Image 1: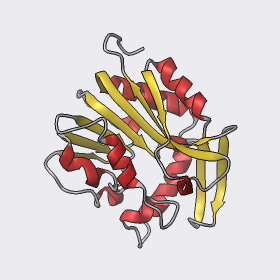
Image 2: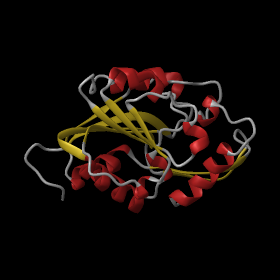
Image 3: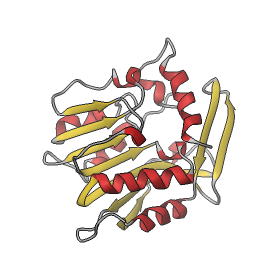
Image 4: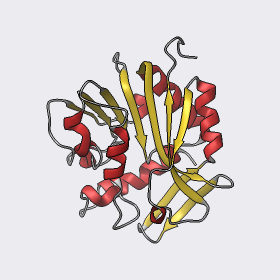
Length: 219
């Protein structure tokens, strides 16, 4: 699975007539973004610059933008970002993470429900880019579903979403190893959702938090 395949799925969603802020919630009638927002704000405050990758329709962004200094949103589909609150401290970039370029560095980088749409080779590239976009001592937060016993690959038609769907839910310890190998330290795992959020017996939602060392340059 490549990210390009996943982007086709989201293009279909973004161009649908019925596109709305909840469209990006693939498990219909569930929205845990209040939990996401509360968790992010354990690591960010009014003095924090935040970079959010894969912002979607801003369900989480709209809950935290007024509680941080600045937040930059990287989201390929403008139709999604039309739902993000218009604020002076919110900057939107309608591009893929690979194409996002800046001279800024951030206190916090967040990737929520994003990384299972990348292959392992692509994941390494994205995390290396995030490492370079963080200030020394900065925080990366990755919330995702992860395979419990093995990597779980999904490829094919989704009855729930009425289109082809692609994702790769890597094992939690493998994802942590990737982050460690890139240079992140003090890596912690948090089980932030209620049990009913984990609908499948072979995957589980976790949030991984890592820190860029204060005394180490990008590897």
